[in-house]
Length: 442
Image (tube, rainbow, N blue to C red):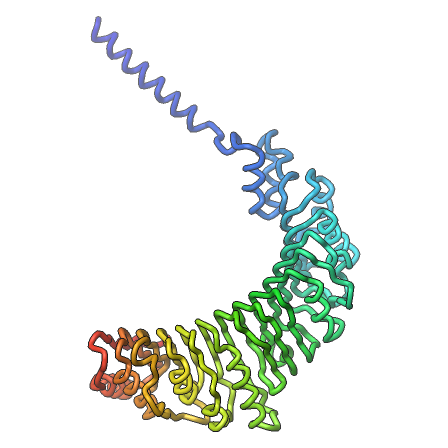
């Protein structure tokens, strides 16, 4: 009898444990969180997805209405209007409107105005319009800290029409201005602007970026053929720390003092209709010399043809802070940078094989080879005579070199590949720690 009682007790205990586990599994842990945390979670979702959570339970019915962010992506007008009417908070942190379906300009203006009058902090707009659809209040919103405009038609910016006292980040993508001066007036109305990105501003010939506060500047005027080229570019940003430019270069490009610049990524393409290549060459070198204080430099000059030797070697700029260089150009520029960058530690070189294929050794062994250069990567080496010249020179003179990586094109014939590997393998190395690797280029 005692044994039966003990067995029944075990069964009852096991059954009670199962009920506890089932009850634990059925508990809705998420709904136990405070409203503030739930709204924060919902703020990462598109607004239409956030609204759908209202069917989960009575607790969730109106939570979406307190979410501080609004993300709309091609929703119809009725849905957007309903969401705006039913919101129960009077402020907006982020307002993102991607609307590429048929809609009236008046409706777009109404939605943008809705955000600006509710103290929006970050706004991201993308809609296909060729008209002047952006409301004036957008350019006088005193709470905006970030604004991104993409394909929003013409931006009617005039002197005194912009007052964005707290705007720190401005991205303009495929937008157009009423006049060349509009960009100047827009920037001048942003007294604390720290980051500016412009991608293919149609219809502007003269682009002037002038600001004492900008620290990050990205300019891309090459995205759609030649439609975005700038005939004249001027940069006056003394506080700049990071610069990225992809543009057609002309003799009218000018750049002010960049003493604070730490990193630059420059991709320049020349105009094939340049009347004076001497003037062009001087302007190009003066432009490059402005980057003399950078620590990291990526420079692509693969399409800049007919650069005069006399101009290249006449430059006296010193890149004393440069520790990493990624260069795409002909061998003349490689020699120049080795001579001028005493503290260079990392070199990535891709030769542009155009009209000029040559390598000229520096008159004296550069200081960077004697004490600093540790890593070299040579891209797309084909086994030409001048390529062997600078490879042998680097291996023999780089005293502290730890690794040289030489990649060759996959299209290289087997015989040429064997010749390439054999020639380089017999080159003497000044650094006993140097390893040479031969990965195949993609």
